[in-house]
Image 1 (cartoon, rainbow over the protein chains, first blue to last red):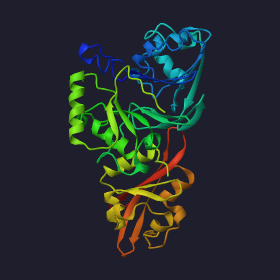
Image 2 (image 1 turned 30 degrees about the vertical axis):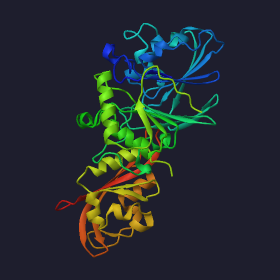
Image 3 (image 1 turned 45 degrees about the horizontal axis):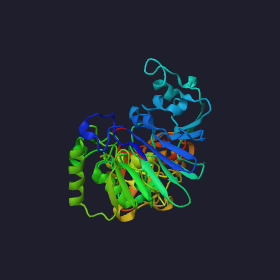
Length: 275
Length: 132
């Protein structure tokens, strides 16, 4: 389930109510296993533990930019001492994950310290890693975006989902190199059933935002097509893009491309069942 | 084969934007990318050759000192960088297979990734200044 697909900053503009204004957060579940992907403002809507015996939640952070962690302080399961919460995030060459998260979860930015959260909290520092949580095999790989940033590939015995909400694989003099060995994030997305990928800009906007760490919709499509993803969700919508603008951009995209893969704009509240 | 790490990919993208010859190798010294300026030195195009094994591309030049003596490979900056994972610099002569000699300075540096692992090396070739 997609809880937040907006990029950069939450938007409360009523003209964005269809695609939603909350920043990055998605939830993947199978049975009692719950993965929360990123802790943007969409995280505050999380209620999957309510009325259940489930005590463990795993939060997989792609990186620590504010739009991916600003919901952490409002994540209710943190405040129940019976809960077992695991946070996974990319390692840094300088400071620990705890230290970097504490910059936000500490005064003056937030009144509650990370160490004072009543739940049982475990932090895991990852890099180009593979690990297992419940029924899921999870691969993380560094991807091109400012600061330590990973994307995730989440697989079970039947299907696979790649989550790369902040990514600029086309960074370079001539854009995306069409050779799979030379494409950032390719291993994560290759042959997945579903790919959620950064598509913040139009091609024209990207010309002015090159190096900011995000993708044009055209580059996201090209990336997904080269990776042979079955279905693509275009995400990390620019905070200035209203529903009307996004619909227009999608129409233009479909009119000028003839990719065979299925693609659409990611929308907050969207639920997708994979086989 | 899995994709290269982003540190390698970004080094290729950077080299692609540079006017000075740049060579990018993996940890074994295999040439995995060279830019347009380096194509002029090698006399080949990356599009045509693709990646080159170390035993192939290391024979394209002969390296000599000012007296015309052949330099042992282990004295060359890139070879040293691949061995000890430190940056190295040296000025010497290269003689192409066509017999053309050029005095150059080479700076080689290792690519150490975020996780602290050695991923490859870059060698940048400069035309040597007078008297160097």
